[in-house]
Image 1: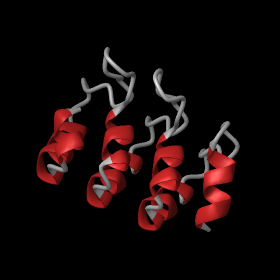
Image 2: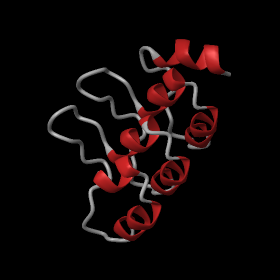
Image 3: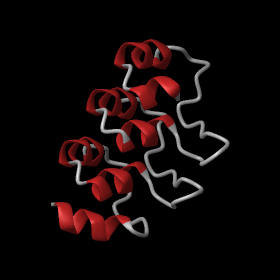
Image 4: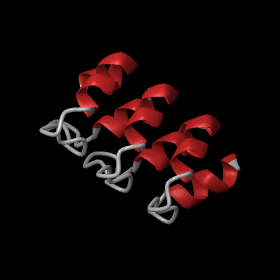
Length: 106
């Protein structure tokens, strides 16, 4: 999680190669996953690395703000990150709050 939050692409790539890493784990304090942190901090390279994993759930909602990674990217106006996330077939564009943000951005 720290590597994703800090934009450390090399460390993220190394960690994602391990089978014992839970890429969907969320932090105890606010419930954000590594993908959410990378999205919120606009680390496009890290978002790309994480979102390439098949076991990633890009639709997890954080416990504090009720946002998905797509919601964070749309709210921040980060078009590059939004485009990366929309490349996934399993992305849910209709999570509460996300559709309005996407409409303003795209």
